[in-house]
Picture 1 (cartoon, each protein chain N blue to C red):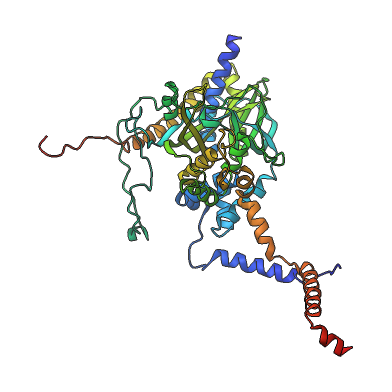
Picture 2: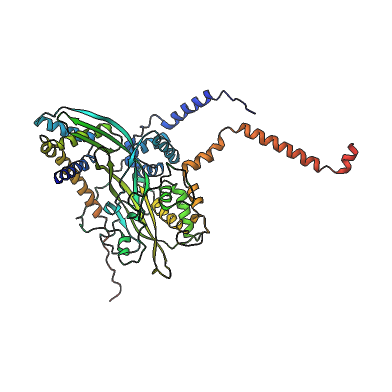
Length: 367
Length: 155
């Protein structure tokens, strides 16, 4: 049965008007600017860029402002925006080995070439609320030191020299790279698609999945080989110019997880790896991604798939918070007709139940 | 061929600097240049246009490529009256910046303006970028851990 429902327009219009008013808050308080969000809530911007899968600080800041700080709503806005622009093409793969480091730590080797560089980190803070930040805080000028010119190779490259760790899988030149924004997801999915999915996946979901592997659901004995954060240059092969043109730089966080060995009768045992890479500074997300990437390699490494984090269909189908929020939140939209039919069915079932539970004697008496 | 490669390397090096500058900074440097020698006539070959580029990473940092996520990119093309065609590409959505980069790229290729644009636009912007990077590197270096061994007891 089709029932036309009208009359919501006015209410919707007024609801959005009220939302705009609430978003602005008390108008005696200064309006927050996009620069303020980008500069002072930078990690929120990073998260929205990562999970919105669009590197553009200003747009992410606008989305956060429009969404009243609801980051998943902001991610949704960014995803919707990206659909309005044409795609010029794909970049040359970025070289994280050439990153201008702002932070780089290893939990496996104390004395890595280039050193342990802490950078701007919450690590080792006491997690005590700081009342001095409430207003008018002026930070000290950062300390400076003579920079070393020593190279800062990836820790996995160092292990790789002795054959102690598996090398990264290579692809032939010109081999196609899976893109889940262009083709529907099919299983089993290869590592390129899995990494793309994880890179835009929900931080909370990946954190829980990664955590579950540590607690024994698909355990893979991880060590942080290295986490690095900094700027990498991006180049794009421009057909009109005829060469790869520099586009500028982006900030990335990379995590190299070193995991328990594999080996066989023909291959000496070596460490395995999980990989994480995200936009901006996002260690929790990048580490979680690396844990889950490793867990999802169970099939490839001949491990028994028993835990949710090892199940690529489970992980990849539930990692996207825009899809997830769409499906969960659609439940609050009008389902009047669906519900009417459910109600009708339930009444019929109850009637049948009542009839079949009426004692025969009573039926006879009634007759 | 070598000359062609040389010029390409030069154009790339100029673009690598310009992509890191702001539109206003490039425009200001071009105004300085114009004081020395009037800019040649030029026109938009492609009006500034915004779009997306899919950014790629590599598995493990050095393995097979995968799609990481997209970035906004603005692009434009400019032709000088003398025929040189310049291309401008930059992260972000600043079409004016893309147009200014394209203009500079065309000037870099011009016999009459190549040296001048390097001297009065690219070089000062490069210098500015290097100062900024050096400061960032020094601030980062101060957070490097110097391990030392605690000696306990009387040894």
